[in-house]
Length: 190
Ligand code: ATP
Image 1: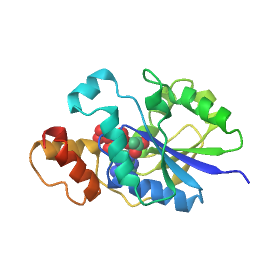
Image 2 (image 1 turned 180 degrees about the horizontal axis):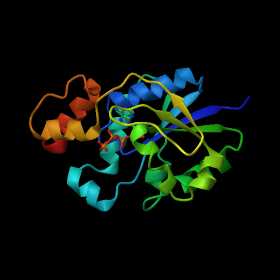
Image 3 (image 1 turned 90 degrees about the vertical axis):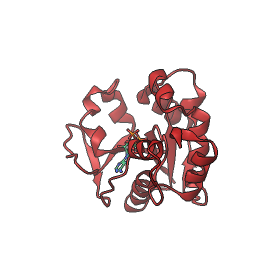
């Protein structure tokens, strides 16, 4: 049987409940077999601004998905040197497993930028895009995407970094074990 694999690419700096909720909704609403969280390489300027390393982001994701056997970590982009284009990454994944069906999940904020993605015409042939709604963003796409309705969640990594820096509470916005890791490692000026 063909395996249905969802891919949620992102910076995950840090991962939060928005990521986990949309992944879970897509998993169940589209009857996928697994969701892979795929951290990307940060552009050098962004990496310096938040102060976290790829290793920090991987560890936080491991903690965030702990205990859910359908949630996996896909480290392919971090293991390659330099930033990779999604189309190149997906090409490698498709070659590794030609029988998998890939569902690439993006929030509504990303949908409008799809036409600017590198070699998007090739990419849409390789994966099925899945768009999930996000507060303050309308989903209008020129490409064929599956829209999945998820509860609107007004949480972003930016919000968590800002609150941590300001010494404000981030409890319930992301898993407790990730909050613990952030505090122990004094990330985001916490
Ligand atoms: P930042 O605030 O640093 O830009 P982010 O919260 O948008 O980060 P990313 O790691 O960039 O997090 O997001 C990965 C993917 O998850 C993107 O496709 C993004 O649109 C989607 N996403 C993140 N948060 C939400 C949310 N609250 N609702 C819907 N989609 C989301």
